[in-house]
Length: 147
Image (cartoon, rainbow, N blue to C red; front, side):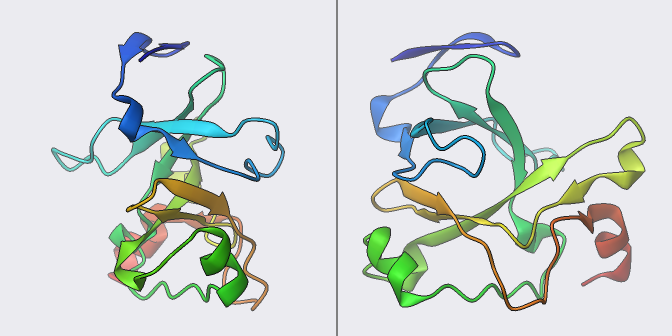
């Protein structure tokens, strides 16, 4: 399948790489299919979560455990059922990143992680209501802490 991207032009992706979001993302509930572009390599942990059918919708995402090793989101059974999770090892978390002009102030949304069932390529964004995390965790500050 070929998708059009505002940032990358035409990109060929295998159909099995499409991640289905049955409920969309908050604010983008009507967009149900995304693909991850880019691989964390060469000390660049960031990837693009790109809408398959809209060239203008993409998000910078990161594995939150890269900068916040003690991240421990609590995912309830209802979410696991919606994602058809059989084995907790099949879960992968992503956080949406905001990169302002001053990159030292980039933040990750740890309160609203994207939970991906990597075996079935089904995902959803969840809101953690335990008060442990915010929508704006400063990535570089967390890395300096060595968390």
